[in-house]
Amino acid sequence: MAKVNLERRAEIGQEKRARTRAQLVAAASALFSKRSWASVTIDDLVREAGVAKGTSYVHFEDMHALTIAVADELIRSFDELIQPRRAATSDLLLRVALGCDAFIERALEDPAWGALVARMARSYPKVGETARLRLREDLARALDEAPRAGPSVDLALEAAIGVVLQVLAAIGEGRLKGADAQSAVGAVLGAIGIGKRQAAATLAKLARAKAARLREAPIA
Image (cartoon, rainbow, N blue to C red; front, top):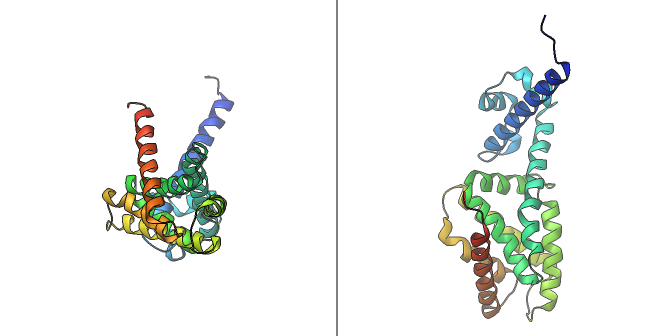
């Protein structure tokens, strides 16, 4: 009789469960990018994921638990997206521009992701909470240094987030393309009270930073 490797069998079972869980989260993300998360049912989910209804309950107690999982995935992706770019410069206004541009750039690569972020951030407050705190920190310091007569830090924060989320939604719906990316960041800078000359200088730095990142990117 062949010897049964119980440890390997357990590993295979764990891998299968992880794949199914990821499949359910991906299906929920796809649905949430098109519709309000509150309108999605278990039947919608299992149809999208191609699994049995009972399978979904093995991994998630209900749709609320699944929504939290989708939100957690987004939250992790936000830090991975913006932190390396924030850490690359001490220029505070450029940090703000880089952070906003990171979201816009990612949405242009994957419009469904942009639509998902826009929907979830507006209807599920925990999504974007950490990114919001980081943006507020950079904004507070940048606006303290910038010569301006603009909005308060809190109003500037809401204006910046509002512009970015609207741009992500528009990209997700196919109404904005890559040519609008730099103008969108410029709109953020204008919304937070940055003058045209300083905004233009920041956008030029942003363009150089993006070009440098492309030069350093490994060739596939």
